[in-house]
Length: 487
Ligand code: NAD
Image (spheres, rainbow, N blue to C red):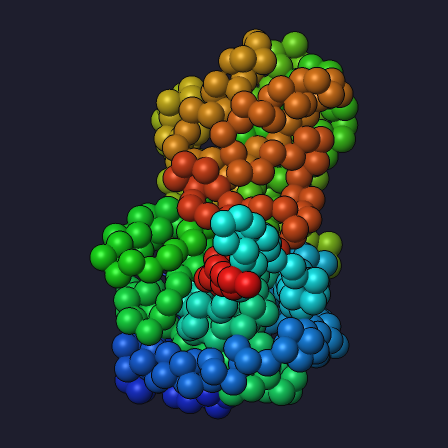
């Protein structure tokens, strides 16, 4: 049984109720019971948060990188000392197995602060020397943009929120952040850590509430200089339209429909093991999850058999149970959406090799009211099926055979998204050739989700605009100014 958390906004270093006095009930996905009461913030709450961030900006932007680094390292250390508590809260709020939150979500949130804390100690900038007819020294000064608006989704709540907060404040900005209304608990708890780490009041302000009200008020606010958004392509489109007349830089990390390309010379056991993980980790609710697998027709039957066999070993159930591999989907509404897509696969002539509707789901009593779906493997669908084209964002993967390398690349690229892809081969030349042709922001060869935060992360086509990394986030959260000194 979860105790109901009464969340408050964090403005100017203080926890405050939303002015409306209204709250949104957020459910525990594994039980269907109320987990948290999330402030239903409105424009006036966002105004207060932006005002606080504006006031804190002068002081914070004038601190030295070393001072900012020290505070961010303190945040990381405190978070680390509370890792198990945060992992438990994340699992209750999001539905993911507690083991995943303990090994991935919270460690990465900690690392986000440590990473950017160190990035700012090692920054250098370009300079040029002009001679004849004028002697001049040019150098680049990067100045923080001011108040950053940061909006994040529900699938990796603290991981993705801190991936925005850490660079924003590292480069000397202050911010107003809004996590998803479905998963606000760890963001709220993080505010305690900010206070404990003596982050000056107003540097980070967190306003909770839904997207069209609280989120949009941040996007539209005249004193918010940039918007960093991670979420769906549909909302990304809308935000683009809202910011266009405001001349406001926006970074959009959006949806995906990621392909795996499995060639005949791949190490099949390694490939199957990793592709099962990349398809079903976090219930398939990671933007980087594999949802289409194209397999060389010479090994197709063997691949499907091994893949299905391994998928059936995944244990769906109570996220609290350390032996659980697949937890609950975020909400009833999302559960219905995923079910709907499995029905589309059936209607389009697909065969459900395992998962939903094939095996009976047996759940422990405690989680009988939760939003669970077994990992579902679909074969026999055509590339034109909506099941192959649309982002389902759940534990569903389609496997399809191909005959030539060219065909595999062409079909992988034939969706509107371009976030990531994986390539499975032992032929190095092919790995380079195929990676070069794939329309995806990240291509992993013989692996998945191996991340070096120095490398650009982001999507092509409808998967987003902009990149995040040490360098790219520095560019996004600062303005480059050329200073020219004649001598
Ligand atoms: P969503 O777009 O519904 O919501 C994301 C955030 O935007 C939430 O905080 C929401 O409250 C807010 N929002 C909604 N409407 C808004 C508006 N009009 N103005 C401002 N903010 C608004 O996405 P979601 O359902 O929370 O997350 C799932 C989606 O996120 C999937 O499509 C997934 O692929 C994508 N995602 C992408 C990445 C990436 O790095 N590319 C990472 C994680 C998730």
